[in-house]
Image (tube, rainbow, N blue to C red):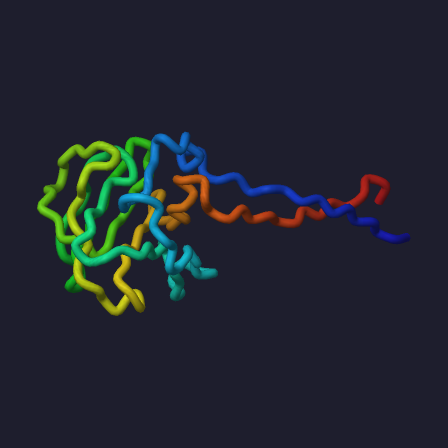
Length: 163
């Protein structure tokens, strides 16, 4: 008796809120910045990985809100300026390193200036903005917001019904 397997490929959909219309979200820098380093989550939450994308930009460049929301944090963490914005969709975007004068609880519109990019850090080999996206404690690829994240396909194996 042989077991016959049929291979089917299914797409893993992006989180519902991340599939919002592109006009809901924008780049956090003017124009269409060059991606220096892509999202590379670790296989386990406690392992090393790259939990966002790095976008090339000169120091002093305005950092803009990718979407409308409420400032949840704006201040230094580990010697770098951090801004976190909570969105009504339950997502949070993060921006590092940013010098900002925003205050917690402040409402901001999409495209509002969050601050300016700080001088280069050791995070990138050239000046960059690290842009992150979270839902709860799970990191997601922020390029999902712009419809520019790579689509991952997973194999789905199903035993044939006759066995």
